[in-house]
Image (cartoon, rainbow, N blue to C red; front, side, top):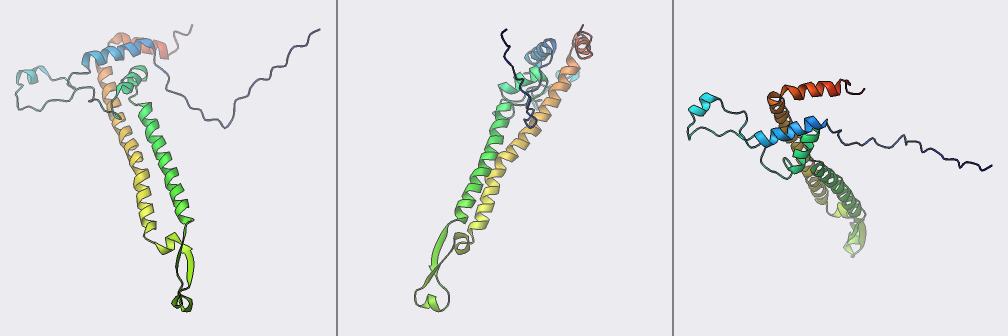
Length: 206
């Protein structure tokens, strides 16, 4: 009788982080968002009324388009793809870049501080022995105290710039996401709403 090999099931790690990308919406909603951006993305929003069109003058302030102008961090092709798939306006590439830049700058600043704190310099000794040319060894920060505020200030700027850029980018992403979702659902057909109710209510699970 041949014995069956024992297969050990791999247990999930308790400490492993649960990192998942946003789940994609149903295909009908994805296509509806895509058609909406193709039709209204380059148009001014909110659309001008008929009276405003009749009274249009060269001095009137032009309204911005629904889609923001192309930008490396705030509005790129990935933002449009993520919005069509999930309804969220964000770019994973820019977020990872700014996060990694912040972490990398923290490590470099800490390494530089540890390196400088371990350095020593030779200075003339104080008192009687210094009068005869005696010397002593002190730390670099003791001999050059101006390095401490320079290191702290430079580190704050070096670490703070990508952090502030990420905060500003998240704020811009949120504003654009709110504007696009409001415009989409105000202009969407009733068929899209009915399909979303049917999908998310579980009526199509049978």
